Length: 173
Image (cartoon, rainbow, N blue to C red; front, side, top):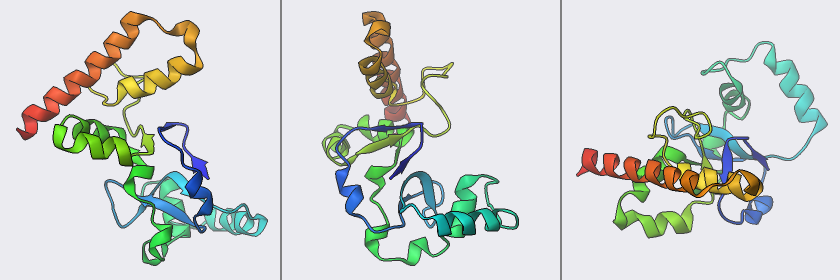
């Protein structure tokens, strides 16, 4: 299992080890392509050699690893459903926060989202209060680094998410 460094696991994901190789969740922006932030792969020296060879000439629609990997695993979308992970295994943080702001979707969201992916905006680099799911990221950070936790920081991150919820609610409602 591969997880980007900007993902946070919210629930047990042991079931991913039972998935066939190659498995990934659809990309939020391009649903017929996968997001490379969470993937199920089997280590293979042969695959690595093939990928290194392909790198010299392969197309990449985004100029990065995700575009290359979508080219390498070009038939991902047409494979059996077991190889397409539900979006809850790679949920964009801003989509999570948007849905969390609506009481009608909150319970299902908290039940189904297993991995949160901080795309584009990172709570640890944010200069605004509109990153979404900031409190989740910071609570995991403070669990790992309790010496840095302060009550005012927890309140600030909760306020960031409250602000995002209300902004999203005013746009939709």
